[in-house]
Image (tube, rainbow, N blue to C red; front, side, top):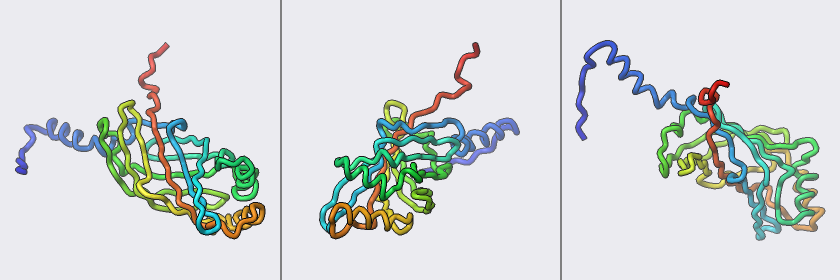
Length: 211
């Protein structure tokens, strides 16, 4: 590939050139996004008695991506395990939703140029994020793939499971209680978590017609 160098014809054209080159860096402030809960999911796998794995998820979450700041709130009382009594026990004894109603995920993603993706185009990036659960905050990293959809939404997918450890969030006592109530030999204290977030653009106030 051959690159040609050139000199701007004037100070004005130099300013135009500089502004054009700067657009990608400024693009993150051009659009805000909200999490579409109907097309988003957070799933985790529990393993009991060392060999039986079961997939669970949360039915309710909400969030936004504004000025490069991602915020996702997960309603822990919406946990769905496929067994009602187990849902209740997780809410009451593991997550203690009466005191800790939500898990919150936050991340700064201003370094990712997601606003310039074309339909069907994807990019991959490593993201540092914070998760607050059961009154504890932990910083983690994960690889994500972001894809522009035909309906003008973004899909953000974790490329591999994120391992969460019960001891980091003070959940060991809750796991012990679940083992007792279910009459199990063991429940794994580390669980893999995966997430799919579908983001839709928030209409800009500047696009609204004055009354």
